Length: 181
Image (cartoon, rainbow, N blue to C red; front, side, top):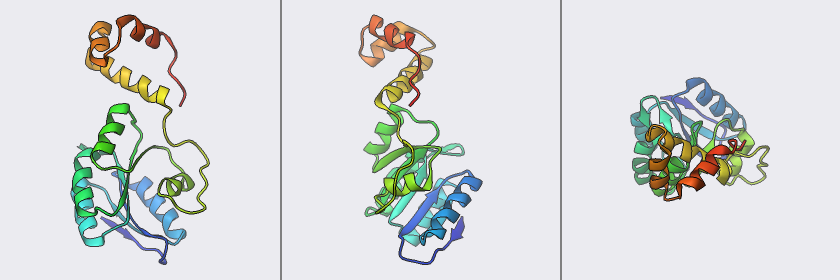
């Protein structure tokens, strides 16, 4: 667990990410903006830190080494019910986005992310978004279809059945190129 403290009034943050360089860089950026920041690199460290520190903003990575941030999320929500919790991932999918929101996340963002985008997701006044941080519905659907298709070992008929669509509709979707965002 790493501690970084800022000058004050900008809010209390808990950053939970196993990428130490990313977490340290983000913590430094937030600290320069006057935020108090705590960093944890694992689920257990995040839970301890949340209990001790009581942050009002939590940025939680979806993948924490071998552990899923989705397993940590409900316990974080219980420990700091008032906090705004945002799930962050480089591996976005419809399934994980839906699960994150069901488990208590207030938002779901994709890496890479800029500090203004992050502040905007937490409702920071005057934080302008410079780039889109969420996938378009088409891109989310594409990613979900690809995941289910992989789980079904490329079997289009079983994939279509699991997705609740006609086989031909799925084939047409698969013939199209993947959306950019």
